[in-house]
Length: 515
Image 1: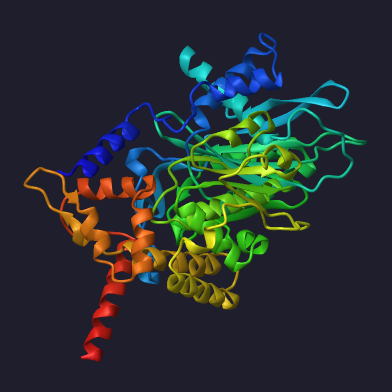
Image 2 (image 1 turned 90 degrees about the vertical axis):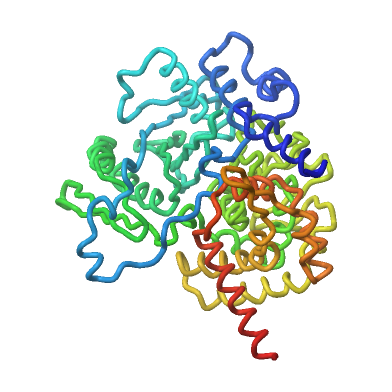
């Protein structure tokens, strides 16, 4: 085994260990933030300090646990009518998964003149029967959630009008498990100026569109009475989560309207169900998206700036989705709470969403890409390294832009997502789709070994070879290959591998025609 391969393997073993916070700078960043900013004086609020300690274990990774790293998407082939009629309940629903763990209401409680503290005022269902240590951990997580629901901090002016907004965030636990937070902020009922409140659903399931529709129903009931929300959520909690392409029906009673049937349909392309590419392309041009993708694919530090929380969360999730079949392995915070703004100084790769009013606190450093998503921007790239346009091979850049131009004919939603994802998936098919040919099979019971040098030297194009030599140094590629090395020999499954086979067959046909 070569020295470089052995060195890579040692590094990988460290990454895969239980101590997953190697990306975090030395010292407790979160504690340092609170001390420097004086945001939470020592001893003043033990619960809030618990939330910050919780953040020190959450902020530094978007990664899924090892078991999920290269999990292929579920089959996206639609069922015919006859097959669909005979589909069993087990096939129509994801076994053992339900829509959400709990719903919390986060309200702003006045602590002084225009000073508010976010507090959980309702939790459904109540978590009974937990042990003491479990309960303590859960309380810390709930405290942390309040900061994500109101990342602006404690300064608020009461409002008489407020357009509701929906956004999401990801909580990554030390063991690699992930929970998604879906949040809708709206103005509570009442008269006169008042602060908004947030409804937050915590779920292990990633499906932004589906939960946005659920929040539409929540908001409709909230306008009648807060008491109307909970029977609906109880019905939802009892309903099993549908498999891709299937629908679940929820019956819900509303005074003066009677019983309504709410149909919640899960997209066929389950790996794209947490993504809304429309927001990304409404904020950036095709070429600007390509520059952001180039920086992300080499795992650089990227900060997105916007006023709207929904824009930040949707764009940052969309950028991460462009990397499929690879997974962003570093710090990922779709909306950085103000109290954690010093995370921007971390020297390691990250994807961060920051509200525009905090812009001055993120632009006083170099070696990163700062992307302005706001409508009134002067320049899209406030800070850049300058080489983003030369990272990707020119021919493949042109092919991506050509493929993206076809989205003008695509409708919104699933069809748009499919066109965009196909453009970037083909990029990876053409650059690294030959990887399987360069995994040397081990003896019986032994893992395979990736032959890195032969892999990139097999590429004919010099510009593509130069890109691939850089890309294979990233952690996302390294962990992808680790999984391949550990798999049993045999045909690979999933969308990426299907596209690779289609591309290889196409090249064979073209070669045959030439001869």
